[in-house]
Figure 1 (spheres, rainbow, N blue to C red):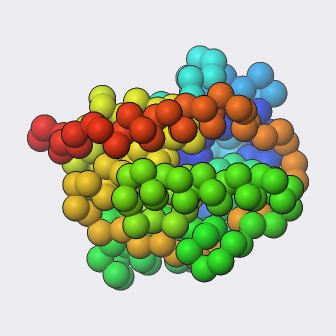
Figure 2: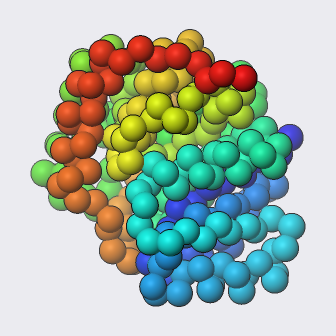
Length: 241
């Protein structure tokens, strides 16, 4: 089996070396692909320095300017398919996703026959640390809103910590994925759900970043709110092989 962790970055110099070392120290042989959107703080330079230490397991794609979370991940998915990986994991650079949870997501796919394992903040109560109560409430009810509109049996619909089988990724038509911010996470899950692939939520504890700057904006929430309504009426078709 080959498995790769995708880490999109923009100005993550405080976190990137620590997250890379944490992932590559795990007992499972994960590779890492960093997709950097032209970080002016030198994030890509740190990754390229570390590539000399980890030439077989650390890779980077550099893009010009901020092009959105969704397009970063789709770029990474296409790279992983091209390089014949079996499983692909999405993960943030800022330690809000605990690297020690990576094996649990991976094993949900490899041992339980799941095509999409979701690191879930809400499938076992609310497991979020260091968020203001207003943001917790907004995130929790946003997921409830998505479940209601789309009829998708997933508690954490906006989760960004996920493991995909490449079989599932090959079935999704990336050209039809429209949302670029956190709505992208909803859209990918909905595609998996409508195409009939097996989904499992794995409970995690989400800890808000302690270093660096959040990339959250009101525009991201607006895109997701209206995008979900549009998504409800869109016919989901598998990608042409």
